[in-house]
Length: 297
Image 1 (cartoon, rainbow, N blue to C red):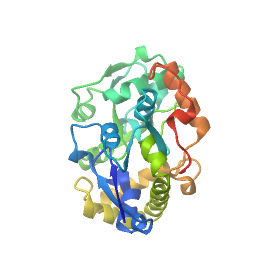
Image 2 (image 1 turned 90 degrees about the vertical axis):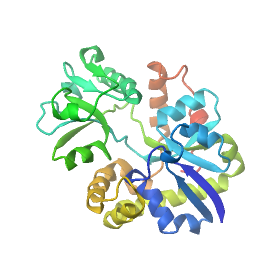
Image 3 (image 1 turned 120 degrees about the vertical axis):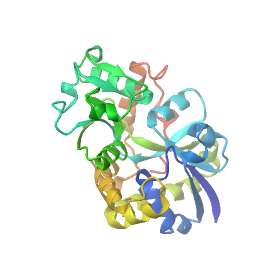
Image 4 (image 1 turned 180 degrees about the vertical axis):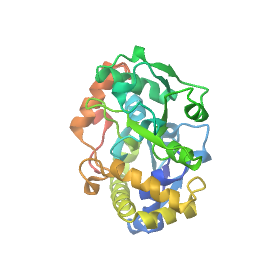
């Protein structure tokens, strides 16, 4: 068995259901891999990209815009497969709010994380909405301020904040933050150019097991929910996990279904890359092959 580390960009929870399934059901072992899923909690002060670049035989995952930025900076990494076909980053409003979609955002008070504010402003612009008409806050806010009306919407992941609010008896409405020309994937898997060159067969076997793991976890959600509850300190409630996995299903399946899980679309990549450059998220527009290695997908 070949030891292989995979660095997560968050805690071990439902967001990694397919990888947990592949580990617990022996799919990685069947491919000759002893995979260690390394929670972000184990290295809280080190960026995932730095862990992977210094980690030897390993890979990791993080948001695709971070991979693009690192690749353009010449840091020697490439995307090798998408965990989620659609980003779980949404605007979260209260269920009875009159803010129902992006067209309703002008004039509202929105709280964002620093990693999401540029995304929101770009997506609004692409939709023909002036981001200057939105009052945004990027630090120092809490979910309590959504409940009390300080903010009309806040940034969140479909796998976390809506469920934290649900536990408090607060129903929510979710608004996707995307556009045809900026349609990110989420928790994109990546590896260094060196590992891709030297261990391509191993990476191929890893990605194959991930794909099967995701298909099984999304098909057998009840069993996956129980499995995650036994290994995740964050998502230890099977019933809540079932609700989260139900919400995750369309994010994993995307528009092409579970048979295309983990794969990405070169044309969508090219649209995203052009938009990142156009809106100064990166200093130049890179070629597709500078950012993506699609041989494993």
